[in-house]
Image (tube, rainbow, N blue to C red; front, side, top):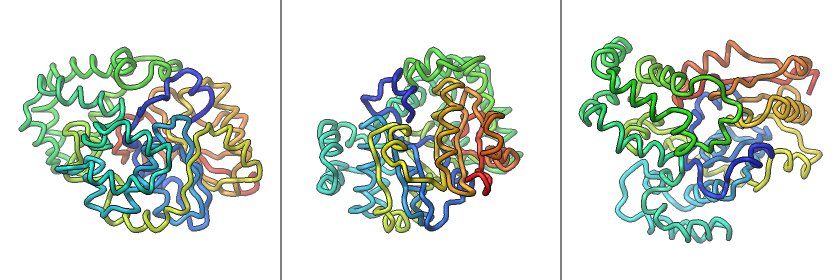
Length: 369
């Protein structure tokens, strides 16, 4: 997270208990290779862990919110001491009779700060740590209080069964896209409601235009052009768990690769700017920058992107999302960064974390690194 965003938002609690960015397109964009050094926004930790599956030399995760780093630390502990099905139970992807037993097994390998945080919040453990964030509670309110006024449970279940492209389009048009859906969706995902219940109001400082209309358009894409049966993000929003799909870091085929590379992951309670100042000789091959740029002014964005490009190796790859504020390489950095717009647009069409308006991929020219 950047210094400007932290100056305006409250980072004293878990804001995101899951990573709401699709690691599948992130990994394809960054093309992480053995020996790479990766800079990653920590958030809840899932995507930083996904980077480990490709065997980089280092993944350096940063976040100014200690609660977010506690989420990452507990995930690391879970990969170390739990089996795959137990990890899913701890997160909340699967039902579990007693998650506190799983936590006690993880507790002994937690650092002091993370242990103190989770010891103080047993209710978050019991509910599944993937439900511990403000953003997840926002979706839970939609799921439990708004969605039942729009669609019965059987219709939601039918949506999540997916089907062919033509079947999905027909179902959406005939059974899902009714007047109540459009009205209540626009209300609940408005700038006002989302600012109060989901994201910090400070995150909307640079947003222009209708928030709800943009998200509704992207949701229509996710429910028709993408397959809901293969979308773990949509499944969590509508059911509170993962039903027939899992995000990259939680899939069984990636579990051992992540576990075996945990010693290559480190995390720091600081801003990107502070990390760069603390490690003046360190350059990076990959940058997972989440959507941090839309929380800052154009001037601050240009300055930070230029600083990061100056710390990039030959051929380094940048990936970040725009949700509501357009951000991409400014003209004055044309000699340093090359946009990969066509590639990024193709990936964005596949983005299962569907509410982002744009996915940005940029590359450092070999001679500029």
